Length: 106
Length: 90
Length: 162
Image 1 (spheres, rainbow over the protein chains, first blue to last red):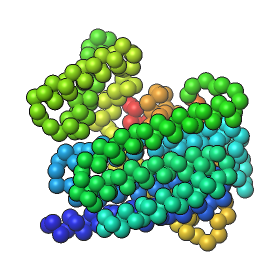
Image 2 (cartoon, helix red, strand yellow; image 1 turned 180 degrees about the horizontal axis):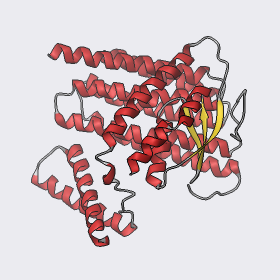
Image 3 (cartoon, chains in turn blue, red, purple; image 1 turned 60 degrees about the vertical axis):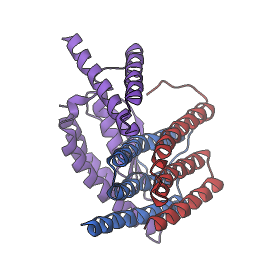
Image 4 (cartoon, rainbow over the protein chains, first blue to last red; image 1 turned 45 degrees about the horizontal axis):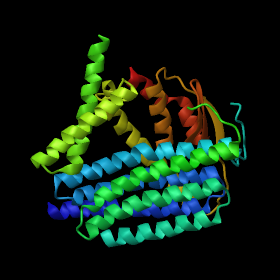
């Protein structure tokens, strides 16, 4: 059982690591600011959840588990707000997204 | 596995720093700082487990809150200086 | 009636604060418990003075319906994550991003916030501007806009706010 749990936590963290790398490469590669925001969103939601979940499986003390859950809740509540604030500030500053087929009137 | 994740997180933070130096707009830099901050939270949490010091989780939690507040604060500043005009709160 | 609702929300604030204190302290020393009780009461009093204790800051009427919604949302998040990751590693980095205005049908502020936050949480879609009746969404692909326009997420949030 212990072996199973540590394998599961390892798989979670490995998936999280792959997502982390993908998100960072996306932040570097995408040409447009708004697209980079999407790539950053990948790492903020699923990768953070997977890594924290992997840590939760490793914790043997319920106090640690509760703290990890609190951190996960903070991250999940704050990251969409932060990316919305970024998008809104950039939009208000007049940074136009690069849309090949632009139809904002729709 | 914890070591691998720690190294991955450090690599990702380096990539975020490259984006922060490249810019080009100020919002790219704030975005990179935000990504860097979220990764720092994860790094502190993972390192707490790696070194068997779960007290690190408290620091990670505080860092998560400070990171969010600082990003919002910086954005308020640039929103008003770049946009030029004060808008209503939404 | 109003007083009763107020009392329920105050109890909910105190309960939440106590849980957070307990989770972070995890130390059942009488002295520390006394400090915890004092801090919780102080913060509850400050919240009361700031007049922020209402159904908006304490949306516990949603608690029972939230888990089903979150289960659905997690599935959506995983699916759109896979999509964005695929686009990251694809060799052509051509941008097919789309901007679109979508209607917001939720009647309460809490509902609108949940809807916009859900759109933000799923990678590939991002709310740029939000007003009472509509929002400006930036999406990585046309498909995700079409999916939002079909309105499954919006309908689920409307059901949630009841």
